[in-house]
Every structure is written in structure tokens, then in C-alpha cells.
Length: 295
Length: 295
Image (cartoon, rainbow over all chains, first blue to last red; front, side, top):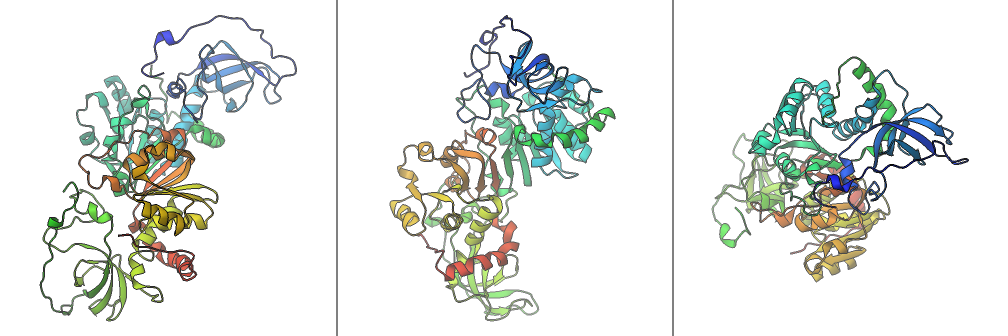
């Protein structure tokens, strides 16, 4: 489908299931506690050949990242009472048959909902995109688009902790205030009210954390510094115009400035999750990093 | 300037100089033997802010890569009779005051003109772009655009030596024949006669050596394989429409396929020249790699 999703594209359906895993099957029965609505879900409303994730099936529940409690399990690694985060259904109870990308929750001194954010997929996305792809160094100029989002707000805070100069863009004054006052960005702007994005970014960019694509990417390309790096996490400005995307006109700058652009998916980096937890948990407990849900 | 360069943009001027380096200056006087007309020179006909190379000055001789013999020298590292390759003027004799990017020629059992091609800047461009940026592996699918050019023909041959499957595009049947029969490409096509570039490249691409940009890049993006790599050496289709470049519409694929795109300049890799010579000279002598000038 093209265009914006509409309420009428979804139904709430009531049915009943037996709260028990069928005998001698390795399934796991979840009671879903938190469900996260993530930008990547828009892509799964398309039929994309060769995509990394299955398209949603009309008539079936959506699925996505969530936090759940195990009610019953036929799988040797999971037992009743375990808390997990990972892919689950948008339903009250889910019978899960694949444990790929399912993580047991070991630390419960932080709010469980964090495992859909800073301690879950968005946190890992920010972590691997910034540290693994961008090779950040102290003092570099970092620009983050969609900066108040679950991923962007963390990238900005990681960059500040490292001693970078950090600029963020967002789509409302409220979000801009949050970037500056809550997340410690050095500068922030509302892209909807900037008549000239190229001029706004003229101080230069060593690292761009790309979440929006389109005109913003084109403005960034004109302002990249020598040997700049762009980690491409998403292009959300294009999600609702997949059939008619914006053109990008300034790619020649990646030669002039020797820029690296790299698309990535968090799925390729989950082996780093234990290392990430080790880094992030103390920072959360000490209040050095915060996480805020935007609605 | 925009559009195609015209004959009337250039003049041949006759003047006379003294064939002697001014006393107590570190200049070097060259007798120019070979001059190379390289695609990058088109960019120097623009006024590009922040570019890696100075724009040409109207009224002054063009400069570019060439091979020269030293006639007189005030520089301690160069003496009369030395052969060099590097940046020199488009003139019979040149007085050079900067030795940056100037290389002494040590091996003269190969034609001197090779130092404007396989043993000079184009050779190093192919070498560092392919080996340093593309992380090539045996069996991978490599696509080279502008494949019969000084750089492309080498990239294709390097890829074949490594055991890759290599496809090239060029702009005439004569060049296509050369790719298949002389350089050993597995497949080649004339891009001017392909009504559907996307379909032509449908076997998939692990590595794309990008020299042309525009529509070809867009077609490539739709055909990149998982974790594909694009080394961006040039975008020659855009050289004469700098003010009005083609849009690129398929960048979203770099997320879906986790593709890395990297712009590079040979200038950053000249420290590898001795290593390159060690690799390439035996291959030239054994006839395992050939070099052909296209006019």
C-alpha cells in the first residue's frame, strides 16, 4: 500500500485461545505486557521483494517488538515466569514458535518498558549505528535527524558523552525543546520551519545519523566534511511515498569529500547486546542517559 | 562552466622560457613526454568550493598527470635525467615548484607511457578502490561501469584474477568487444542500447565500481545484493550537468540490503604505491594484465 496508513486499514478482533502450549511442541505462550509501534513497521505494510522482514499478512495480527511474560513453554530455554523482549504479536496473548531475536530479561531494577526502548531494539540500533558504523571521535560534528525519536535521542546522548558537538532536527517546538533541555543537544531545529536546510547545516557535519532521507539527506550531502560518515538507519520521509520517492541530487559530494554512506539493520548486530547492556545499564542507573517516549 | 567543453574554450599559446631553474630556488624543470587527459579534469573546469583540486585558471596552461624528464633541478631529491610521473603542465616544458604527488620512475623495462595509465594514477585508482574499499572475495559478482576506461579495465581484470564474476558496461560495441575479448570480462553490454538497465543487471551485484552515476547508479541500487559495496570513483554522466544533476531515487535499498557506498580519491592512497608496484609489475611482465588506451 502507498500513502498514509488509515484507521480503516486495521481491525480489532476478539477470539479465544487455550492458555497452553500444544503438547510436545517447542512453542512459547506469552502474556504481552508492552508493545512498541516502530517506524520499520511501515515498511512491512508493503510487499517488498527481498526485504529483511516479512510483510504483514492482511487478516493476521501485526507483530513487532514487545515485552512479554512466559505463561507456558515447550522450549527448553524458556520457562514459565521468564520475562522476555523481542518479536511478539499485537494481541493479548501470543503463541511464539520461533525464538530468533528473543532475549531473556535479566535486569528488572529498571522499568520493563525500557526493553522496548533504550534496552531493546531502538537502543541497540543507536548503539551499533553510532559506534560500529560511524567511528566517532571526540570533537566531531554530529547531526541527528528524527532526533527526538527512540533512536535519535540516544545517538545524540552517546555523541555528547563522547565529547562531540551535536545538532538534532525534529518536527515540533516541543521536540526541539526536549532535545536541548532534556537530552543535552548543543543545537536543535524544527525542520518544518527552516526555509533553507542547507544554510542551517552550514557548520559542517562529520557524522550524520540518517533517519529521514529525501530533502534532508540532500541538504546534508552539501554540508558533509572531509571523510564524513553517514549511517543510514531509515528514510522515514519516504515511507509513505514508496512508489514515488524524492530524488537525491547531491551525491557527487561523496567523492569530493570522500564520504562513506552505510545502510544497516540492527538484526546484524544483536550479538553485541551483552556488551551494550554492560555499557548502558550503569549509565541508566546513574542518570547519565535518559529515555523519553514521544507520542 | 556547464555543458560540454568546446574547442573554443582552449587556445594553444606559444611563448619561450629559459631552460634553467632560477638560481637558489627548489624548482624542477621538466621536458614533458606524455600527458594524460583524465575525466577528473572536467571537474576542475568548475569553481567548486571545498574541492580537492584547484580549479583551472583561464589564461594559464591546464595541468594534469603526465610523464616527464628532468632537465634541471634545484630540488635535492631530483636530478637532471630523472624520469618522473605526476602532475605537470600541458606544455612542452614545465617549471614545477611543488613535488607533492610526484613519483620517480624506477622501472623502465615497461613503456614510459604506462605511467599515465596502469602504473600511474588510473592504476592506483583501480587498485585502492577495488582492494581497499570493496573487500572483494572470490566468486562475488562485480559490476564495473565505464569499464573500458583506464580505471575500469583494470578493476575488471583485478576482479577476474581474484575469481569474481565480472560484468562491465561501456558506450560502444567496439568497447564491449574489448571487454569480453581482451580484458576477459564474463559479460559486457552497451548501456546506450539497453532499454532496461534494471533488468540487465538482475543477476545481482556484490561490488559496484561506480564511475558514471545517474540512471546507472539507480539501476544498480535496485540490484545490489546483501552487504554489497559501492566504491564511488566518479559520476561522469553528471560532469556536464553539474547545475542540473539527475535525481537518484532508489537509495532506500542501501538499508534493505545493508549496502556501503564510499567515495574515494586516489590522493589518499598514494602511500600504497610501492605495494601496488610490487603486485602489478610482475603481472604486466607476465602478460597477465593488459592495458589499452581508448580514444
